[in-house]
Length: 381
Image (tube, rainbow, N blue to C red; front, top):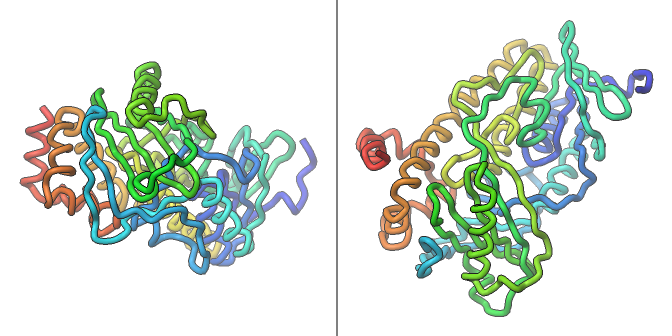
C-alpha cells in the first residue's frame, strides 16, 4: 500500500464505470465536484447485455453526445415456447440498439469531458468510513472521499457494505452471432416467452451481429443453458460459431432495502434497480446515476440532507416500478399464454408494449388502477 497523497483525496469517488457509475461521475463533475471514477475492468470491455435503450433511457443520456446506435427497432416478433413467431409493428422506433462496450465507453468519455478522472483496472478490496471520510482500499493504493457512489454491479462490494438486500437474482446467458443474410434479421427484435416459469429469450439486431440470449432465475443453470441451445437451434443458428458466449447475473432489490449508509450511496444494479419482468436495467442505471451524481455534488456543496434525499427519491420514483414489475413477473410465471396473446394478438396489448418501450408508460402507472392490481393478483394464484 502506498502512502496517501493529495492525489488520492477526492470529493467524490465512483466505483464502477457502467451506465450508472459513469453518469454519476459526469453529473457530479458538472456540478463542481472533484471526481474519481474507478472500474476493475480495462475499458473498453465486452458486457453481457441485450443493449436495448427504451425511451426512458434515451431521456437520460449525456447531453451533447452523439451515441453510436446500431439499429432503431420498430418491429418485434413474439413467440411462446419457441413456437410460431407473430410480428407486430410500432408507430415509431421504440428501441435503440447499442453495443455495450461502445456505449459504456462513450459515457466514460462524457464523464472525463465533464472533468472526472477515470482509472480502469482498479479493484476495490475494502470500504470503510470514519469521521465522515470514506476510505477505499484497492490492490495497490488507498483513496479517500467525502462521498462514495457504488455502481460496481451485481454482488458488488459497495452494495454489500451499504446493506442492499436482494429479492431475486437471475442468470442471463448470451451468444453474439454474426449477422445472417436476410433483411428480416436487421429490422426486427424477437422475444420468446419461455418454457419454464418466468423465462424468456430474445434476439436483438446490432450493426454486424445478433445478440441472442435467455434469462431465468439463478439456480437453474443447466436448464437455462438448454433453453439457449434450443433457442439457437430454433433460429437455425445452432452451428454458427459465436463471436462472444457469456453470462451475467442481474438482481433486483427487496423494496425498502437501504440505498445509503453514512456517506456511501449506491446506484444502478448495485442498488438492485431494474424492472423484474423484462429485467431492463439501463433506464434505472441512468436515472439513479443522474440523481446520485447530483446528490453527491450537493452534499459536497453543503446540503447535509442530499444523500438521504437521494435514498428517498429511489423509494419514491423507482421502487413502485420494481414492485409492479415483480407482481407482473409472478403473473407471467403462471400465465405466459395470456402474455403471448396480449402482446402478439391484441392490438391494445401490442400498442401498450410499444408505448412501454418508447418510455411513454410503465407498469407502475398501470398498477395504480385497482382493477389491474386485482386482476393480476387473481390470475397469479
